[in-house]
Length: 419
Image (cartoon, rainbow, N blue to C red; front, side, top):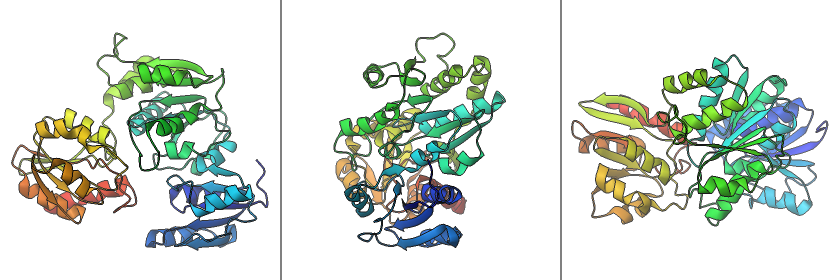
């Protein structure tokens, strides 16, 4: 892909947009950037860029004709495909690709791409740690927070890329062809962006688009996995912890990581040891503190209903649940029975608080808060010794925070302030 002296527009100036700009500049492109938001963080991001790499920039708006004359448009995850610059590019016949597609065009290393509604960050992290324990050079990037474009120029054919990918990133791939494509599970999510579950599943299944018989598709051994197997030309490997002796003590995420490692000849016992010693990831059922007999757990990464449902199944203590945020078209009634069994009270915040409150009003005590700090104080006031205060929002974070990680960090700071 020759980008020398080509004019390329980057839509979105968050992490992946910044990384794309740097990669494009390194390849000799003339870059223009546009973002409809205008925040202190975006201005900070713009200030970090070398001015000689940027031909033009607009923030706080998208204007008609901004991408006109460009040779290529790079779209950041989360940018709607009907936004003005993308619609303009399509009208002008300008190719539109995702940041992971851009990075893939320059990647000499095999790619392990991991997606799914839940568990993809955990499995990606486990796979990276298994490879490192086996002495294999490997980079972890993608939707996990480290953009693929940040890493690609330092790679060789002997390295391995572990790439967490979202449905948003897969919408605008073209030649993206992972050596291993893993789809861990699928349940309703992002229904504010997709018309229905079928459209969401179709976006996820784009991960198989360019695979052939030299590649692998890793799928769960269930009815959904069997259906997805029909959508790939790759060899299919199914994972299940129930069928194999020695795997029953592991969970689905760990078994998926072991299956991926096996495709690269990594010793199973070494991989199992990594899984057994794994303490989890930040913002996923992360124990923060215990104050006056009340345990605080940060599950900010629970951005959909299924994630919160899983958290409530795992926890044994009575729960004060802090939930709410940007609604993704979720059916919150799915957790009704588990909330009835496990949750003593709820503290709600964000755009979705009225919708959630209307579903559960009358079945348990519900309070609302304007800020996460206020929600933590309110929950602590409702808690008794032996309870657990769980931040598990069931929603995206973008109504109040830059991402789930910022939401989790603010929760932890609010807990520290209590003590």
